[in-house]
Amino acid sequence: MVDKRYAIIVAGGSGVRMNVRTPKQFLLLNGLPILMHTINLFQSINPLPEIVLVLPDNQFETWEKLCHEYTFNVHYKLVAGGETRFHSVKNGLNAIDGDGLVAIHDGVRPLVSMAIIENCFNVAKQKGNAVPAIQPHESVRVGSPESSTAENRENIWLIQTPQVFRVNTIKTSYQTNFSISFTDDASVAEASGEKIHLVQGDRENIKITTQLDLITAEELIRKGATK
Image 1: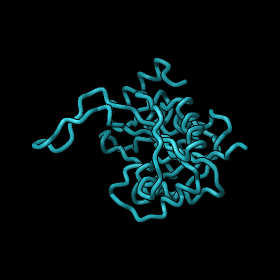
Image 2: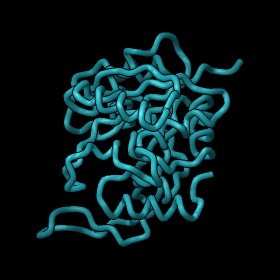
Image 3: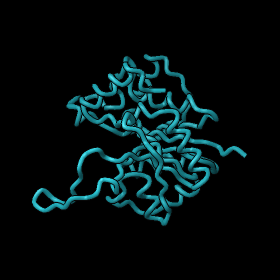
C-alpha cells in the first residue's frame, strides 16, 4: 500500500538579512519567485503530495498577485502562519486530514534534489522519519569566543529539509508547548521521544538567507544543479 503524501512548505521569512523590504521567499531567482521554485519541486515527484503552503496572513495578497503575474496555477491549501516557525508548522499540520507521510520543507530551499525528497519519503516509510543532513568540511569548535574546545567534525551534522514524518506521529509531537530549543521539526519530534534517522543531504540544498546565498543559488541553477 502506498502511503498518502503531504508537503508543508513553510515560508514566513522577511528580507531583513537580505537588506531588502521584499520577503525573501518572494525574491526572484532565475526570473521566478523563490517560493514558486520550491513548490514546483514537490509537483515533480510521484505520487504527487498534497501541498500545504504556510504564509503570514499579511502576505496573502502579495502572494496572490505574484501567482497571477507569473501564471502560477499549482494546487495547494493556503494556511496562515503563526508567531514562530513552530506555530506555523503546527498550523500546517492541523490543515492535514488523515495519516500518511508529510515532508516539512523550508520555502527558501529551492534547490533540493528529487533524489533527496524521494529518499526522505522512502526512509520515513520504513523508519518513521527521515532528516537530511551533511557534515562540515571545516574544523569545529564548541563553546564561546573566550572558552571553546575542539570537536570531532565526524560527530557534527548540519541539518536540512525536507524532514519527513508519519503525519499522526509529528502531529502528536507538536501538541507540546513551544520551547526555544525547537530549531526544527526533528527537535520537536525528539523531545517527544522519537528517534531521529539522518539521511545524506546535499551541499547544494542551501537555505537562501543572504544576498550571497541568492547569488550562489543563481549560479547553481545556471549550471543545472537541480535534477
